[in-house]
Amino acid sequence: MEYRKLGRTDLDVSALCLGTMTWGEQNTQDEAFAQIALAKARGVNFIDTAEMYPVPPRPETYAATERIIGNWFRANGDRDDWVLASKVAGPGNGISHIRDGQLRHNRQHIVAALDESLKRLQTDRIDLYQLHWPERSTNFFGKLGYQHQASDLFTPLEETLEVLDEQVRAGKIRHVGLSNETPWGTMKFLQLAEARGWPRAVSIQNPYNLLNRSFEVGLAEVAIREQCGLLAYSPLAFGMLSGKYENGARPEKGRLTLFSRFARYSNPQTVAACSRYVQLAREHGLDPAQMALAFVTRQPFVTSNIIGATDTAQLQSNLDSLQLNLSDELLAAIEALHQEQPNPAP
Image (tube, rainbow, N blue to C red; front, side):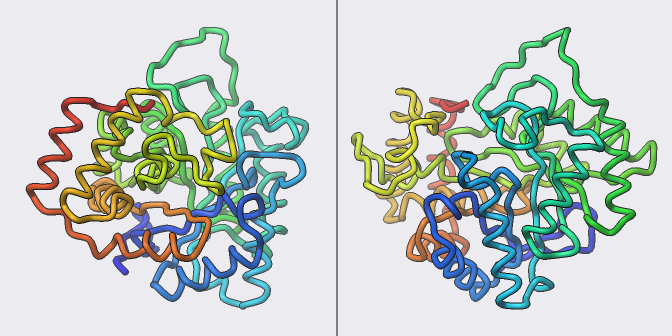
């Protein structure tokens, strides 16, 4: 396993991070435990979750993922072996069942969310606490273009950072991260933190894969120069880049088969581009999923690549992607495809 510094902290995190958003919905606790055990055996020390997991979010399964992870810590006593990341939800996104749906990144909601996450996770601190998505109206979750709303009201970023600072000082969290953020939001958070002595964001968790490389446009330079590296989510584009959905296939337990809400990578131009990447991998004798993951992990602005799986065989294959070196010829071919059809998925 390869390890990288988390921002400007003294924490070393594995280049592959264990994603958990299927636990409690597509995966049972026993299946989740098997994934944790395998990941740990392979050197993974970084695990990412969120208060709203599993997805799709439902009142019946709310926070099941954090409870499963907490049960693992209690059963195995290895909390100190992990860099634990979680997130506080923002408004909208169909989660009216969380704190009556009136979600804000203010003192009331951050403290309430954090305290409940700590209880479920059965720990006294979270190593990386992230704002899951901006409270303000902006372009995230499948929106590439920004449309300004002059009437948009949101909690001042100063208030959000001040509350997070209080939680750091209280020892409940060690470091702060962003997620689904924009270049403006990221730089504003960093500017305020440095000016006021508040916690500085050490990472940004955004989508990044062969079908959506929009992070490169405005955030890659920020990630490198500000040492606020990317925690890449959806590196397989909801499994599309594995090739299992080729030619309209819908495997029985596939996420796209089970849940209609996951449509971000299903438009015609994305499907066509995906097929070309899958074919390219096979022409080079590579597993398409491993090629897609290796491409993400090798990027200089990536701190860790978040891999999720619904069974240990899939997880094993994803972990093996770390051993894959992409040739210059293959990288050139990937870049040529990208130039022909850049960012077909939002």
